[in-house]
Image (cartoon, rainbow, N blue to C red; front, side):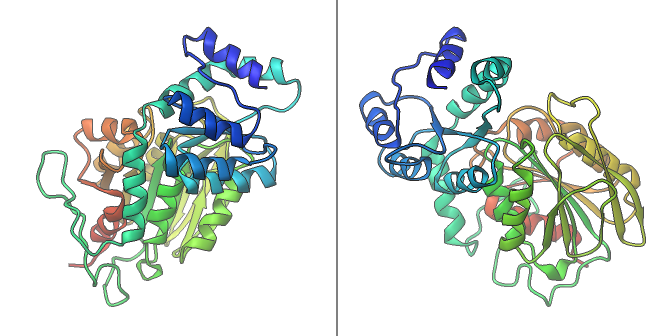
Length: 356
């Protein structure tokens, strides 16, 4: 696998400066070569990917892309590595390694290049900010430079706040998104009675575990979406890997989704645009759309659709985005109502649904 990945990267013009056969060697190689990006296996002898990531991020912060096999155990370890500071992960193929990996060459190169563009120092600052709380105004601003809707303070999101009936929020993210989605969802109080749809660019085999983690870390009941699923207030669905999640029906505060394997949209499946556009078409009660960190332009058309349907839209700011591609494209549509740092995204969502 090391040889195949090295060949793929070298053939694409990416200089491989070191190869390590275990986590301990990886930590030493990073210290010696100061690379732009590290591809890190999850399971390795002597030191696994979690510990190696933790040591690298504490001694020589470097963008790390985890390579993970499609197993439940590796999915859990991968999410732990993301918590330690890894930027994203890439699912290793099953079957014949060289043949299957070669088929994924373009995708691997794209992900490596996007992860290499991340500033790990800023990522560390964001992680610190997540644990510091939101008692200080972080200054969310709108796309025109005016003050945005994000607010902070001891009364934000308390049970005393009155919210509109039957609100729905659609959240989209990609590179760097899992920990950010977890932060936002954990900041949303059950008192808001939201219906939450999350589209995270993530392969099959990982979205189920992702949903379980979110369920354990938020007040909402979170599960991986299945075809025909229905949710009401206080529930959230995570788009299943390799399936578009469409809003197929909405009635009396109950939302229904359908899963399809229609062609990729914006070169991805699930696509944020698919969920947002169908939500804008069918949800008749208050609706908000949120675009978080990620590369590419997925979500821009969806934000426009929600805006044109009278909904509220929010984008994560550049300073706290691992990759500012998706939020930037959304903002450029002119249809984003507020731009907020990660700690204030949930407050911005709640502001949209508060009764004034």
